[in-house]
Image (cartoon, rainbow, N blue to C red; front, side, top):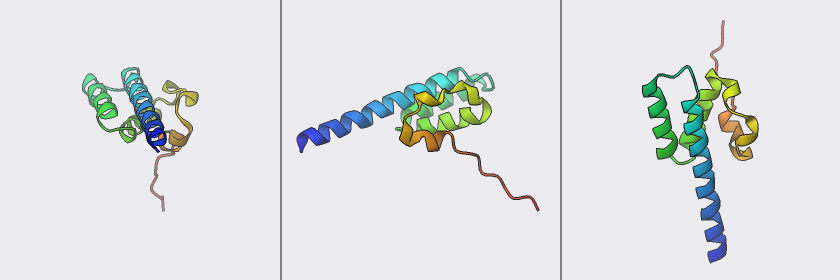
Length: 91
């Protein structure tokens, strides 16, 4: 049981570090952001585990789709990052 718990913690921590790193790199390389926005998105990537980084990557993907290679995002989180934006219906 201890081994399973340890392995789970290692996988979650590795995913968090990987996603946070991707969020910081993507925010730093997005030319449409101001320096304050880059710092705020980098902080959000690090401060909020996994979901914060996925949110930052999603925002960067909306503005610069080529900034994030699809192969670097872990498969379970691709739907969060590459989701299409919600649009209102036109009548």
